[in-house]
Image 1: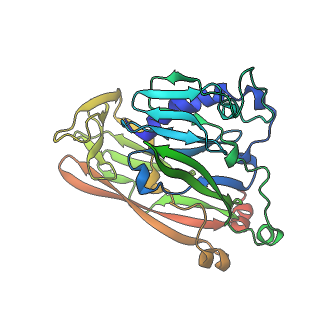
Image 2: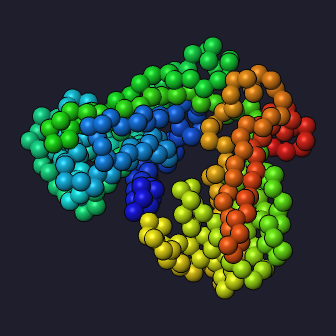
Image 3: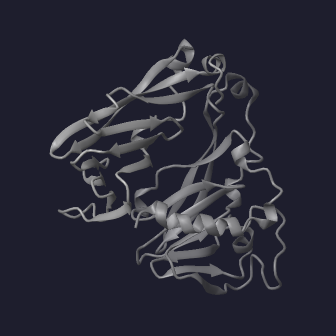
Amino acid sequence: MTVRFRFAGLLALAGLLLAGAAGAHGPEAKAVKARLDPLPAALAGVEAQVQTTVAPQLVVANDSDRTLAILDGEGRAFLRIDRGGVLADLASPAWYRSQTAARGVPLPDGVAQDAAPRWARVSDRPHWGWFDPRLRTDEVAVPHELEHAGRPARLAEWRVPVRRDGEAAALAGAFRYEPLPPGRFLSRLTSDPALTEGVTVTLAPGTVPALHLHNQGEKPVTVADARGRPWLRVGPGGSFLNAAPEAAEAKWVKVAGGPRYTWTEPRAAYGERWPSAAVLDAGERARVSTWTLPVTVGDMPVAVTGEVLWVPGERVADSGHHH
């Protein structure tokens, strides 16, 4: 099970925890973001993300038998995560303050920083998400010169100390100034949309472009994933996804009855939020990357290729489009 599938349930849970902050203005409306740095070697096997809803939320998975303890600002553990599930210290103020993005959370009787721990299981699954106040962005100031320059910058650091079976480590990152870039990225095909007779591919631009494959021919069309393994097969007889990508032979599962399939394709997107300084300074439409999608029609390899263009803001406005 991949991280994104494990975290999906946590984000749904987060939605239930936001009632107390429904009127807040979240950091997605701001240019200051909390970003996570790569985890240290001491946390090998632990997976973590920072997700942004109405506030930054730490989401951690630890599917190992080595317990990961999350510490509050005074060094007291309030969460324990391992493959057996998640334990919370119900006597810790940090436990209650981390369950909502709202400030000034009232604490139940018996909850205090110096109270004796009361550990209780809150999940049988080895992952959890919480609103850690150390990731709040609303009080992070952006220097005037950075706002004037309009360029991304690292402003300050944040750190959440942890222990893994007693060994000290930390989830750490930075507060970044990330204004919207003055333009947009546009992905387009450079190869012929008609791969062979009866087989066409089209692209719908977007932050992550969508590809549409239509096979009216007699041979199946197979698309490989980023590691070159069979991922998608379209027609005849429908559309199929490979349920066993690690196996020697593909295990095709039918996902659509017709010989056409549409999906979002990260390989056709630009990997960075901003273009290079040289491209920005030039102020011109420019190609910033190229991409290739490995496709096989029957036994014949056919490359689907494309490029990503940077379109400055004034060009977008002149053409009558919005970004």
